[in-house]
Length: 504
Ligand code: XMP
Image (cartoon, rainbow, N blue to C red):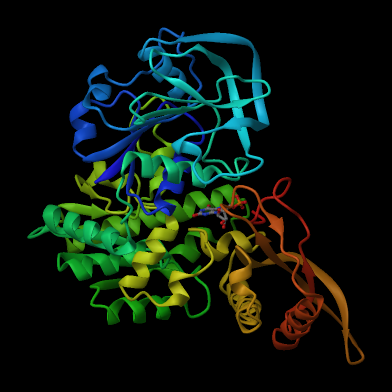
């Protein structure tokens, strides 16, 4: 059972899915023009028609397949979705002549969609067309000062339209409105992480039982959880972990311990010297990334050949990756964000992506159910090129050792002070700048180390974290004391934008 969202290209479609999952409803996003059979496969209890950039007047606008609305499913149309419903059932939509963007207040509201709401209801508008005549039997159930038709409902109480966006934070009571729609539609709200685990296990077993599966483990939460899932499903798998020498202190051992203990067939490839050699003397960050990506694929391919043949390559692709790349109008060109992205075609693998309908926090829940230790499950994001992009200038073993130890002091202190989970990402950057200092009577030149910690919700924008001065003081004293090659410690006060999170 599910709710199917038909996507007409709104930038907020993934948010609708996110909100419904928060309301414990299994939700699938399909292209706006999806075939009825494709929709049926997900056994929907209700449909949501998303907003989108098109106008119902555009001849090229994507529309739902005509049979889809004949099944009598409850429907909520949002923005373009509402205009489509109005037009489809015989109402009139017109260019309002005046686009309405931003916050608005509902001047009146009534009916099941607004049940339980009281007082001021603020909503977020973003549209140019407006419904000017209702289909027969429909009624207006909300208005704003600018817009006499802000929400509509049909006579059966199963079809609804809202001109505003209930899914965004600027509609503070949007969750209640979505909840009311689910109640009116009689949708069962029973989706739990346990269901997600069962569904993922079923999928893996159904597809890959009796087959061999290859997987690249990075030590991050997605690939580690995927490895545990394959082990739990009992399918024959090889989980390849490439140690490129750019990992943090103790990271390799931690991953090995956690995954092996859970029955994962983990194969660690020690490629440290190969990566160091390839990176020798390279300063340009993009060049570093290219080299690391190239070497990774080469090492992974060698292992695939050595351990193979495999029918499947398992990847921890997440839902936002799939939605972001759906191209709005429904082209299902799934872009891979993974290092091994080019490999399936080249090596003839079929893809196994059991997390492609899950969000990051849902994968964390799955990790919890599968026994992934919190040290890995709740870890900050860590870039694929690892510490190589946190050493400004050329990378060598001595600098890696300095940075690993400094990073460990910073991260351990954050954990000891209960601050680790308060920040989205924290890191140390080893700069090539040497500054003067005094130790005893001696003048000494040491590296400048930059500490960076940011708060963020998705890494797209970020603010520097207001860590307590006493805490920063403690870390800034500890680092040069324990690592004599570091002479000075600074804290980065740049937000994103204009800065990025990493320095390279
Ligand atoms: P920036 O530095 O662009 O980083 O603000 C945003 C997020 O992306 C991570 N990042 C990377 N991850 N390969 C990755 O896998 C990369 O080359 C890379 N560069 C940045 C960064 O750590 C942050 O979480």
